[in-house]
Length: 450
Image (cartoon, rainbow, N blue to C red; front, side, top):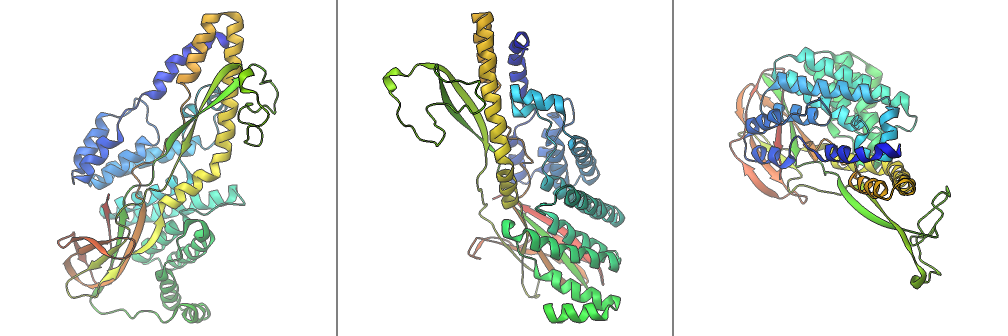
């Protein structure tokens, strides 16, 4: 293995190569030019399809109204993620020697789930509601798989997907499936609320009352009506608008580099080894610094993540003389991303420490054979030490939902974007136009980046 380590220099260059730059994607999006962002991503595609590029491409294609192309990219990303769920032992071992970036990226559970949200919307915009129902069932199957794999499953993102499925089933007139999905949504939101900070949206309770009455489930109807109140009466020649408002970006992962000195007196082959200057309790005690002889400066890189809330954290929609409707938070992607990272952090730190000490041991062995080889191995170890910061960066920070009845016809939406105190920061008086049909649900999503 020592003789092959110089080739890690080549690997380090490969690790550092990026097919596209995130900033080159977001700039045209923020200027209202999603087609330019889509074209840029197409021109900078990696040689081999990979995650998260496929998810980024699919999301940008969605905003550029290339819905079929969006689904193709998201489907491919989902297929890769599913294939990689089973760990690749060879690349796992390689990451212990070089970098976590060599580990196959299989996407987080919440990333895989939220991809079904965009895939379903793509089908809606293509006037293929049956396709949206297929995505709903696929999302349900994925949730059930995650639940079956882990007794302590955190349910991140599942409430929103179940809620979304209920709406699609209701829009297609599949009342039983809609009721089942709304029940699951209520359960999943409650299971995850403590960590995600997202309470069950009140509309789910209204849906449970509405559908149990429609289906004639008398006992359940009375139970839910006592719990959530009387259902809203349907108005003649009215339809319904469901608008999803996506705000900001999910916080990206960063990198923190730490330096740990290894002294000549340290026994690094001891399985309980901790660098002397750090100490087993994190304190420096009883060290005569004049006698310290530095053997090796161990460098490690670990991923980090922090809050990055956008300015707009709410929405209000008005349509002509209708009563204004406020958005309800249905998905907090930032909280989910941070909680997911925190859960993974201990194993990341352990893997990082094992890799760093392993690089030192290999360097020391290389020096015994040849001083130049030892120096080259040392350099390779330094260059390949990079934190794994891969993620689906284009995801929104939060998703809000507005559900409001509207008279049949074409309406212009007037959008007001709110700050954390509910104050209007910006208005979009001539927003998108939507067509409302009697007794039908119209879906729409809107994105801001601030």
